[in-house]
Image (tube, rainbow, N blue to C red; front, side, top):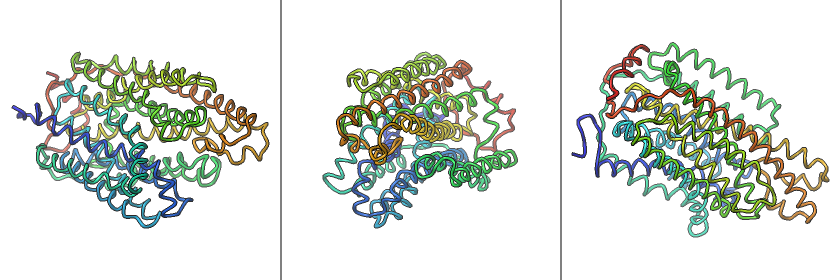
Length: 523
């Protein structure tokens, strides 16, 4: 039997559907990075250099704010139709982005892509929860984690290849055949239970969440780069974002079917896992974004080559994610892995703080492996933890919340680490002539080519200033990684279920129902 009465899939049916889900997630993850190498060519064709950053920002913003919406809609109307809708939205955005005739059109269609991408990431992981029991899900979560590792390396490489041999438009067109294959497989081979109860969509909650998170992400994206941190724009975004989020929390307590049920936070497992995801996202995205910059400036390599040199980090993440997933499935226990993973991540961040101008490349690679192993041991485990703890009709929103908090944490991490780095670098370069430092850039916008063209003595001074500034960033990352390490000790071990949980065909029960669910089916 390949399909069981409770909705579980096995054998060839599971492998086929899982491959389609991974294709969908791969597309969403790939489009976070594939555009980077095509941006100079896009500007040369469409113009609009002043709005270039929005090609990336619009995608990030749309995918982040849409994530919790998809999770809730999947719980309400069924995972399959919502996932298919997300693929179609993503493919429509991809086709229109490739057809863009102006920078404004491209930015708008990238946002449409992002709206679809949010559903691809959440939908795939929630569907896995519908067809694979938690006890067996670890091995699949490890493979899902590998999708992000592969996409982060393959994105810039594939983008560069397509731009050099075809056109920048193929960076978007390449999604169409892959997405069509995923639609075909999911449509014909995936059969899931769809709730038949009428639901009330929390439109106000969706609007408030979108507005509040959008303002905060723009704050972290623009702060210290396009606008000074103390500028009216940044302060206004911060005040508006905080106020809207406060109203959102107030409204969610009163909504009939809230888009993000606050009762989820009554579970210590969900609260601890969400806090860990947020802080790990800060440490991971905030620090790792500087590794390619270090490789480009210190080892004088191209952006594409720096992407290849991060393969050790991705290899460590991939190996640890797969092995830990298999171990969890075999043992039926997970708590030790987040504890070990965050501990290894603290060590890895400390090792990165030792990077200097004279560090051999093989040593830098070894340090990256350690960081990758730490991330691989913990990232996807947190998704499994919240899915196993959630009630059947809230698995989608629990899954999306885990992804959402990690993404928002990453946005804040990039901003905070960028500010720390820019401040330290500015202080260390204060002794150099203004004519030298004016054209170098700052933070993640530091220009490797301009540094390489400096006179020998000035070049060496800038390199040492850069390396010492970066060491402070990674030390902060180490301190930040210690937070989820402490939190991991408070993560309660809940036995992994050996059967899948079909969503109930009724409105969500009162908060007390969660206790009944958690004690019911732990066979």
